Image (cartoon, rainbow over all chains, first blue to last red; front, top):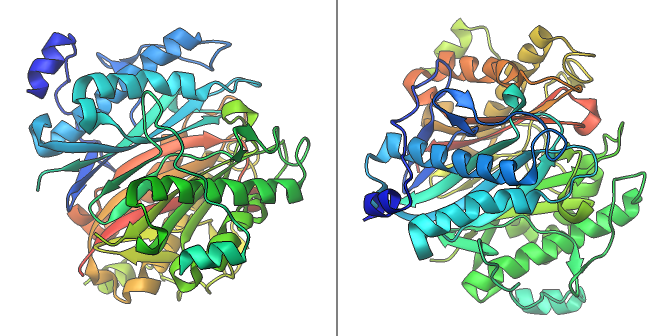
Length: 152
Length: 152
Length: 152
């Protein structure tokens, strides 16, 4: 059902990111899956780089948040196999690489939140934090992690 | 019992914040409630805005942390109905909008921690992180989220 | 077994940090332990202070991440008593005090991740976030918190 919804939205969940040396994309513990912080990587590259909105426009940052959220789902998939096992997207944390004076982090984060709503409906309604930070890995405009509740 | 304590401390837990389009104030999953990041909003407005301590004094930031913590409890209440169901305040994360050179984030966070201690006693003793960030939504001086363990 | 591994690696897990007034080093809730954010304190003092890499070199920041991770284990130990009860290091969050233009937060965080891998093997493979922030408590170069799954 989720796979059909993803097809309808034209979203491809990439194969599980390769396990890295020191950590993994996601861990399942009890009924929860915790993802690592995900960047807006597509085909191995950031889709945008720099601070919002001086280097990356609000609209592009929103799109980067969407891609980061998709990568979070790839991370969840890497440990549960089937996204239909997701009972609830519980919590989403959004870090926005913020130029001085930028206070619209929630508008960036909406890219992730609205996409999760489209994919999962009621199950996609999550608690969320959006904060600004001064630097992110690889100069990414956004980094997102999430916690999902899954069938055990 | 908690309601009486709140009355004694003259704290009003506002009605559950209205559900927003893309996310919700809190989610209950298993025995845990995860809140969204809460700002020091009172009657629909931030009680202070700007960086600590250049725009907002340490004392005012402490007060903002108290109000944010109260709003976290409002978020928990929105999903469990009765704050007596809280078995433990587990984790509190405090993001402080920090001017250059400000390193007293824990003193700001104490506003939240001490209030939770007054309200919940032993059940209010939580693990906590306090970090500085360069920007927050709406130019808020502080953003707080928490995890509570609740009766199922 | 973990104690022997720690001895082999010449790592001393300090006695549980003293409970502070307003919060505690860690909380166990269900099968999870959530730690407070830990700084690279050793014998009551930060082992380094300032921003990475302008004040603190990447190598020293890596070392600070190791010490912070060790302190996280001390926090876990304070609530479970025996580190053999850890079934999995689930999630590690690393905040790096970042000078302008520093985007190698993952290299700093690897200090913590690789150490946890050495100590816990497969059980130490965690999900991780690494973000840059503009200020941290006491001007610490790094702050780390973790979530562990433990035997109930």
